[in-house]
Each structure stands twice: as structure tokens, then as C-alpha cells.
Length: 181
Image 1 (tube, one colour):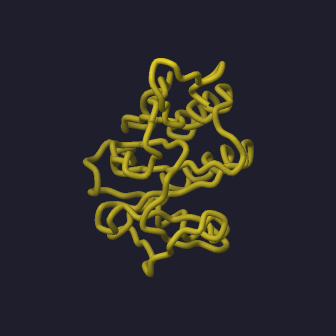
Image 2 (cartoon, one colour):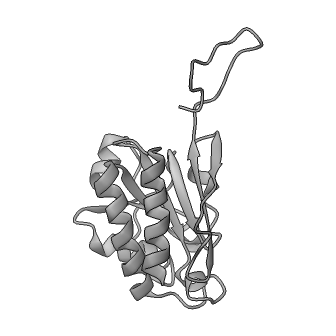
């Protein structure tokens, strides 16, 4: 059920064609919420594995960089590949997530990446929030909610957003044919 739910979300993102190569997608996930338990109470590396594998599909199909948000015990820092740190000149912090401080999803991602790193913050182009983990602090300033057909993953509510450039200027400003991109 969990894999099927996330596959539907991933397929909808791919159909919308809103992600571009080298954009950053932040993933916030409570595996406890996915399992139907309160956030932070019943983390699952098994659930994290299922979700991580599907997020890799999104990465492979679009060329985006994935950033897995840790829990509040690590101030919602993010697990990324070292290549992302270098490419975006991010500041690395010295911590290794574990299920009790970082969460199962971030811990699993850290263990799977060949060259993992943790950064304190990021300005992502899009994001998915599975289980109300509060990813907004890591999105660029103008977030646009995405209406997803699949509204849950397991038992967790799922929300997604993309960002767009700020529209500046007054009544004379022209934004082109597609101001959302």
C-alpha cells in the first residue's frame, strides 16, 4: 500500500513536468505517521526503505537532487549527497542522523548514500511533506501548493509544493507567457 501510494504521487509529479534537472526537492517524512502512529513514536526503517526507493525513481527520471529532512531533534537539518553540498556551496554540519535523533527516513537515506552529508538549511525548488513534518522552512520564498490526487501515503497525509520566482514590479510589469516558471 505504501509503495503504491507514493508511486501515484511520483507519477503525478512526472506527468506535471514541473521538476527540472539540478533542482532540489526536499522530502519530509514521518514513518510513524505513515504507519498510523503519532509523529516520532514508531519510526520504521522498513517504511523508510520503501519510500526512499520511490524517491530514487523521481531523482532518476528528473535529475533532481534529493534532500531528506531530519526531525526537530536535529533542527530539521537535511541529508544530501556531498555533490549537492559542493554544487550549491552549502554549509555542512557535523552530525549523523539516527532514528531517535534525525528520524528513520533521514537515517535510512544517510546510510544509503555513497557520500552523505548533513546541512542545516537549503532553499529547495519543490518538496513533499509526508506526515506533516513542516518542510516549509526549506522551500524558496514563493511556494505554490500542488493539488495531489493521492492525498495519503499509508496513514499519513501528504502535501507537496513547488516554488516559483517572485513577481516584482507594479501594474506596468510584464512577466511573460508563463509567470509561474
